[in-house]
Length: 244
Image (cartoon, rainbow, N blue to C red):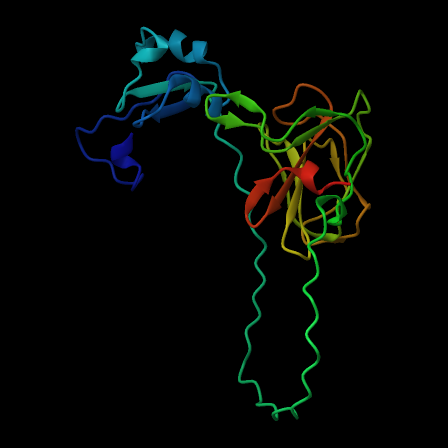
């Protein structure tokens, strides 16, 4: 119903409202969309879209811009992780006297950047990797984290990969399930998902190696494991490049 999306309280006489007959999502096809991309983004299979009679799709190749599709069982993606807001306002600071000029020290050579394996992060959980960062998932979908298999160790401890402040504790029925986000002093963030239990609260400071949760299988999950993400500069990066 694009006509009412800008103002859901404004309905005019004669307007038609599309209400799907099943639980799911009404989607307006955009230029460049493919059926596999749409199905992957909303976590359903292509056949469920094709099988819905009202969609009137003969084959996956007949999807064109402007079509209105019902996605049975489709779920929206998890909400983005909000950044912690820290603002300090200065109120009429008193001017400080100019310091006495000091002799300039001899310039020192710039230090070499540390190699990835010594960047300060530790493994949040010990186990084999079941899914690597960047693995192709179909359509335009790629795995944007590191899955560490628990091999049946449901409830095993999950620890903070580095010290920092908990900026988000959330739980959803899809995607990441129950998860924690921690912001570190260098501005990076780590995410720990599919947890069965959480032992920290938003705003709490945690130390590296401190237990923050327990292995589980919440959200979109096929077996107990930890989904671990590393964000640097507002983008996900491969955690393996920064773990010892």
